[in-house]
Image (cartoon, rainbow, N blue to C red; front, top):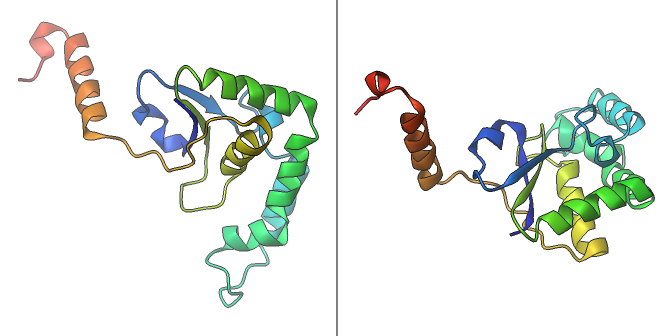
Length: 157
């Protein structure tokens, strides 16, 4: 069991015995989401990206230029409510996997990965930062569950 991370389109593929926690603004965990100011600065920096800037993408460029990681870490670690919430999630992750979820794909820098680092460093939490990969067994189990819930005349054999 561990505190883990993935992105929103993977939410429906998570194991049934895991917990999904949305960490985007306006989704109930604003203390674990980037501040409005940080998001605005990040968006503004993306506008200045040039393909010859030496960065892989506008997102990577803006992440560096807005000092996103440093600012977000400070925002969370200096906020008692944020640390309390992260501690609660870390404690729940002792019993079952808890996935922090936001919009960014695994190939992009993202604040949920910073949350895992903070939980590991400041709370000595059990974390697994590796990307979530749905297993064939999980999809077979979902198919079986779906088949069991269909009325008998709708089942496909």
